Length: 236
Image: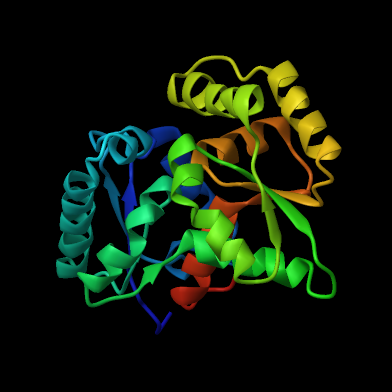
């Protein structure tokens, strides 16, 4: 294909989620042969400090320096845009964007835009299932409110179950407890949520494993779509 825009991917946060991201780009690109797929520059920076821990501990500058160095390296290697399949790292998206000369495809804002399109004719309450760091930073809250949507996030023991799914069930390679998920789902129903954003890429893994319905908006799939379209390919 004539359009050969490479996209640089800062992955490894975590590895299982990044592997799913890459598989999604393959499965959702209309292609008849290898050459119909886009070129990606994949960086798996698995040794990156945990984003939630770093942000909550006041190590923002350290995390920014590492992410910015990765983005600049990918830019130097010829990437025409950067994608980061990690929601919490988007707390630093504006600073990263300011430090590079190519677009950063913002997963959080693109997902909020997708939710807004879904509820174009009515106000809606949208749950945000994410890490403590993402919630504390207010990433989805601000993005959803900018589109007139009402964000809702779980508290206390329900948020603990969300973190358990992320850290024990996926990052730790443990068992994804379906009963925990059902408890979360019941809380969403009680809160009157009309959709729920899977705002952590580990939750994207959960969504696939449990074959969850469209009520659960997959932020990583939204990023995949934007990456494919940016590279000039057809999303299917």
